[in-house]
Amino acid sequence: MENMFNNLSLEKIYQYLLISLAFLMPISVFGANLIIVIIVVLWLLSGSYKHKIKQIISSKFLLASIFFYCLHIIGMLWTNDLYWGLEILHKMWYFILLLPVLFTIVIKKNIKYYIIAFLAAIALTELISYLIWFELMTPFKVQFRLEPEIALRVIQTEEISMKLLANPTPFMTHVSYNPILAFAIYLVLHEIFLNKKLDRVKFFLYSFFAITMTFNMFITGGRAGQVMFFVMLTILIFQFFNSEKVKSLIAIFILIPGVFYAAYQSSDLFQKRVDLAFHQIVTYETNHNSSIGKRINYALNSWEIIYANPILGVGTGDFPSEFQKVSVANNNQEHSITRNPHNMYHLILIQLGFVGLVSFLSIFYYQIKFSLSSSTEFLRDTGITLPLLYLVIMFSDSYLLGHFTSLLYVFFSSFLYKDFEKN
Image 1 (tube, one colour):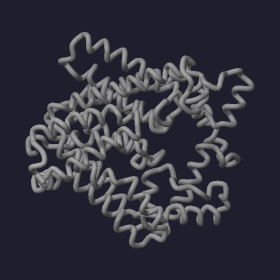
Image 2 (cartoon, one colour; image 1 turned 60 degrees about the horizontal axis):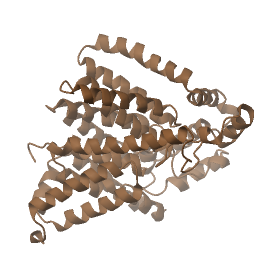
Image 3 (cartoon, one colour; image 1 turned 45 degrees about the vertical axis):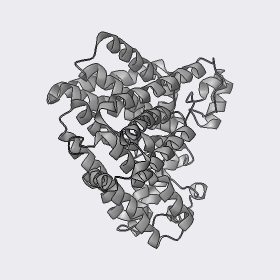
Image 4 (cartoon, helix red, strand yellow; image 1 turned 135 degrees about the horizontal axis):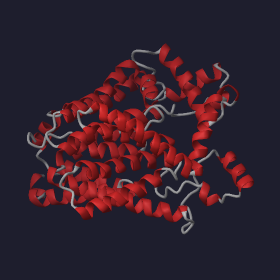
């Protein structure tokens, strides 16, 4: 089977496919999945299996990722809901197959092309987002920044159009878009402030791009992504000042509140989202059905399940049924049916207990450990930033189960944590 392909030609095909995947990743589920299928099929048919396996087992990060997935397979042994367990295995297949495949075919010299393709896709998405925002294009689908009933009340009382209340995120929901946008902003800002070889044309281009993306961040309604944006700025400041902690802290205490205040004052809808979040927190006792109220209930009910099943959890597929039992018992019938506790850590603890959580966190540990030893500034900084950002936003949702955010994580991990000299 190895003779089916010319190695040099296959390598070129892989690179074109990877660049295409980087571009389609934030734009098209079908397009990205089609490229993924082609890559995986070619990889499976191309032979050199010993060399591929050697590369895979040389990475502690990869082994940790594969082991984490295998725990989900083992967790099927004590689950009652086999159907949902299989659905979870399907949602996470990137970790058992796609990540190892990409890891063995990425090339260091082409990393810049992967990133350029990804940023080009973000630029296209951002352009369409602004066309929707300025009412020059009809929204692909209506996604409210505010809860629908609140949005309708705002329309009635303040005469704001439906288009301006709809999230201008054309290819995905704001839940996925804002975290991906925050990471894209990081890549651009890192070039601006830490790439000493950046020429003047690219500097002005990236600066313009960073400004427009930052504004775009606050005209869309993904609060988790906006939190991720401020965390990203904090990390970037520490990286910019390197070991000068005092300067870093001074810059953080000035810049972060300043950007937040500017966004709060300049974006009415961002202001409403912040005020709404604060209102939902302080009125939780009397308003359990709000966005944040639901998350608080999800957390309380989740911890009750975790307390009863601390070591191995309830099994890979039993979260929905166990959550429903606890919710009904606690008179939370309106929140009794859900398949996602909107917290990745709670989900893993419920499914696989503390054994699963330790396995999960080991993935990020090996990522950060590998990055700290990297001799390339960009790979080191970005390799540290990616896991830290995901560790933060996974408190608000299961971002490694969603297509767009999990694919972003897997794609960038495939080259950020590869020892190219060894492989």
